[in-house]
Image (tube, rainbow, N blue to C red):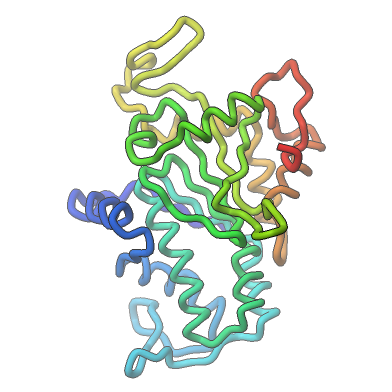
Length: 274
């Protein structure tokens, strides 16, 4: 199953969620908590629920018990959570509240870590920095010409590494694996798609396709379709249990379904060797 969050439509909630994410990256909006409990509640617990789908609580404690670890992992397998624009913050918060619910239910740490590894998180054009960890399979997709992205994130190092290596995929340094090095769970994917200010073959162009909006998610989806990212997403949807995002990328590349290298004339190197 895939769950998607596009831009939050409220003119009040959109800036509130983004500003709170900037000021406090650990902030979780109440709406994100509600969404997480409605999406994940029955997948992780045998519990009582309120009419709105959230957990029933008594003195703050969830009224129920966790499902067995194997059942939780089986239920979470094949889930892809997608956020677009400010929706990246919402999806990020929803997934963090899933972990908090597992903590509240007393689920062992090893199951919590495997739960993070059983899903795929995709951020399309994040407008603020969203901290990564070494366990969550997360793909943060940025259009290097998207003014909404580089206004809220320092993407210079990521873009430079993509251009230097000639690869769309750049390992996320925050998704480290401790002393063992990069865990393979977190990547940036750098696109050069149309935007309000676009650097094309003929130099800098303003508003090349007449949208006056470089943050349109259709630019992202078109560019991702062109390189075959759907082959990675489909593998995540089909997979049951914990996985490493790097393995799905390498498998899709090896099958010829995914273009990893930015130059179609140069044989791409495996994502694990980036």
